[in-house]
Image (tube, rainbow, N blue to C red; front, side, top):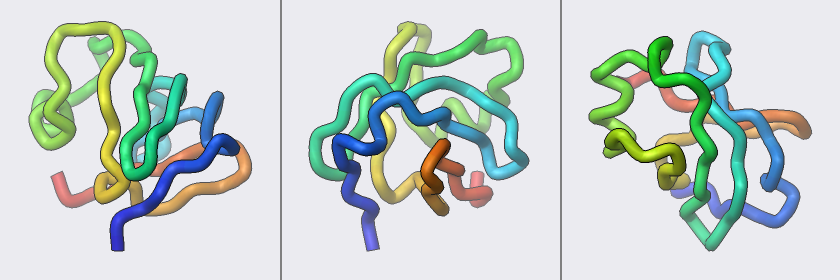
Length: 80
């Protein structure tokens, strides 16, 4: 099931499946969230491709990319 983002997700860290921080949720809209990315140097190319992220500073995260959410962060699935 695709995760629906809520206002509570704003400001949460976005983490890879391994726990590396890649950005922060800026805005949410249903099953999509806008992420302000951290430095791209640590973001693997395959993960960028899975997420559909290009060279822009902000990018969209889809609910089906999220494995789990906690009070502080959203962790991405590892299937990239």
